Image 1 (cartoon, rainbow, N blue to C red):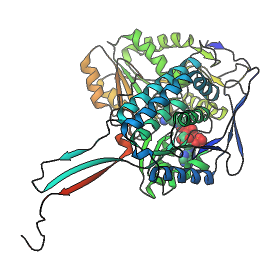
Image 2: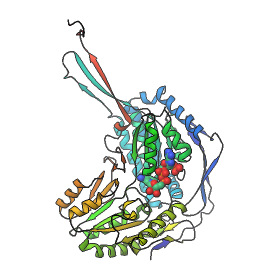
Image 3: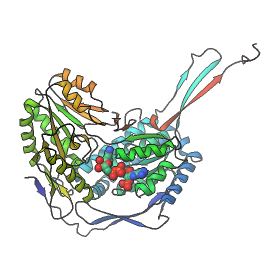
Image 4: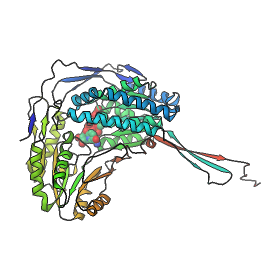
Length: 502
Ligand code: NDP
């Protein structure tokens, strides 16, 4: 049985009301429509937004364009941009509890985890501030006496930033500070389900002194607001995180005007475990990798690929630990697994489980919705006897569900790991570094963890192979991603004529 933490109704609660941020002004939408978000854990309305439309998106893009073409931001010294980004990081730190609570109320994630995400995000803003001072090009003094070559890095221009609901503040923080560090301006659209913390970020940036129009924030649906942000000719680049399906649509839209795209999409990440692995360590990482953020995580370690000789023991030990995972009210500081984002999403997860049972998988633990009186929750679930061709082994379930597959040889483990369309991340567990390094080199994934799982740092690039995305976020080159390259080819001395040699 799962350890359940029943949610308490939100007493004396004041619903937060938000406007949209366009050109430095907090404004209503063109149509004056309102969107509401209810807490997925408490079933109560927690936020109310002005809903943006395509008209608002076009106003925001025009403001970002003006701020880029005529405003001071792209022309500031790197040190000046760094100072403002650092000031914003300080203000974020001061409002960390408020930001964490908003993310918890709207996404259903545990408050202790949300606090960790805000602290991680602040660290990323500070890292980006440091990089703002280091964006530089190259020079070539090797082209002969008559030529000097200078390669400039210039901000790419207006960036559309579109983010999902699973890590609202963290994901915008993997994009926006680097775009700002490069000197770009931006239009940001968070998921309509979890927009509050991004709007508070807008308040913070205004308080830090960001010039009007540099960052504009819209709340609205993907179809109404996201699509114009990917199509408009005045947008130079799109940075998108979300489903592979919408990522492909984004790329198709971007192709109409050949915008640069950076895509961070889905994952179905394997954890490959050899018999000589430290199983105590792995079992903790398996539970964490599968149930952290209720499995609503592109990096979830949702495919366990276990050596056949240890599979039964490992499944039974993971099940024991998973039973002790506290699931329920995300506002309770002891909760480890919170609510599922929407009832529709919960139904989608349950459909995957029903299909898997029909295909011959065995339910080792959990298996469905948990009735906690309020909101929507799901018990941590483990499926064994999963075969590589089943949908639950190949597709992103995005729920607290671990699928267990088995292997005999390293080659077989690698083949199973690489047999799907995704390639975001992977884990390998073995006391033998030869196993770890061979898997690390053969698995087609953007990150491979060895004897650990889902660790990260702003210094380490993040992104996917194949249908998990395009480009890398974070790391020392993250600012360059938001920059164009320009060549200055400089002639020195008298010209050598083309048609009349001198
Ligand atoms: P989506 O890809 O639909 O949403 C991600 C973002 O894109 C949201 O801001 C969304 O807006 C926006 N969007 C939707 N349609 C368009 C469009 N036509 N043009 C531009 N932007 C658009 O993901 P969902 O939230 O629907 O989740 C569905 C599945 O995607 C999940 O079950 C999971 O498998 C996967 N997913 C993966 C994530 C990851 O981190 N890799 C994150 C989230 C989901 P809005 O939602 O406001 O309409």
